[in-house]
Image (tube, rainbow, N blue to C red; front, side, top):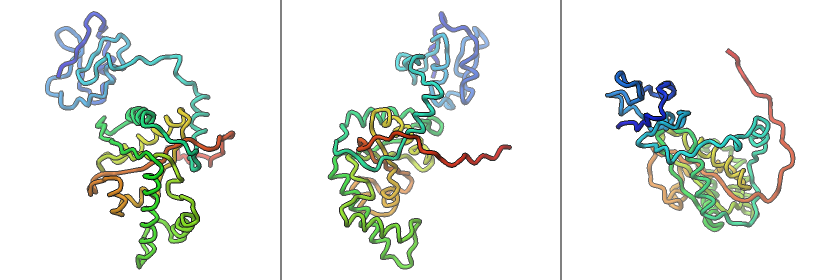
Length: 273
């Protein structure tokens, strides 16, 4: 693998060398232009840092073509106050409008979420998208079935106290949906256990991007628990029996209500060393 360096633009300043995560780029002894150090090709993770950091537009990576890397537009960079309000205004949405979310919008959100960090730039996160209230409702129904089965186990062994499961079942029997909140859509991020943090990072990007598009999300912890051990739920989502895969689901829909204030949170707990 070779870097395609525009020698008419390259200043040989070594910025790409210093920015390379695995230090696989060096300046050639002969002409001083950057190159991948012989023998270290397999250590390149194709992260694109070398392409993105070059202020001269001289670098081109075979796996990260410069023509596929749009420039950062300074007028779109948000300031500290804007970022603070945007992050603090994110809410977990549990009441949705009866409005479907089109597949194009979900596709756009997932593509943005694919820019979340991944271990070693492995980019192993993949997605399941569930659209249609009937399909989402069925997943809630199966999760309630699983809760009933958990209550019948003796001795009871589960992270949720039995009172919580009984409350959820009671709400369900009363016509509510305590599992997926009658959301019109659902996404599931999944990846191998060796990069189990990556789906969580991707979903964090997903929910922030959704907020910017006027959508709301909520982490579906009860469905997540059912996914771990209840076969009918896994079958409904067409998941293979593979314990090496980590899953996490997230509700998606248009919020029924608008929020007007930024709720206070507990002070940060910090241990300075």
